[in-house]
Image (cartoon, rainbow, N blue to C red; front, top):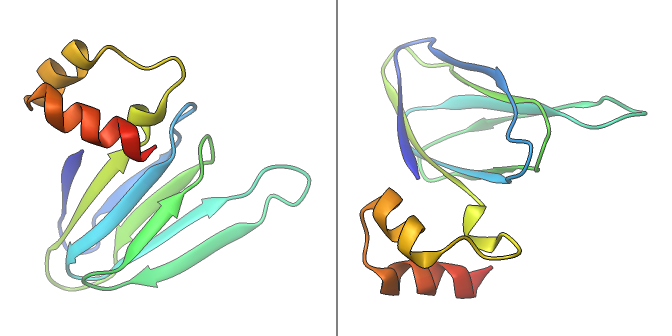
Length: 111
């Protein structure tokens, strides 16, 4: 998980996560989010998110976020690494995310 702070009109530019789905929750402000579908359509999907809204970026697709407000915006993003097959070692995940192994186990059972 990561907290993303956006300055007014700030951008998290086009990028991908080749092996993970991303879920984004807006905590403060308003964001324009979007992604481009795969071939053959290459369709641009976009939405305006407000505080409390959640959006999912499908695995491997080019996507972005942009603060469309005059104030700061904040979002929390998470990647679907807890559902990998085979599982990533709970010891490794617990150390990387600085959480107890029981938290890792709970997350892994959800995916």
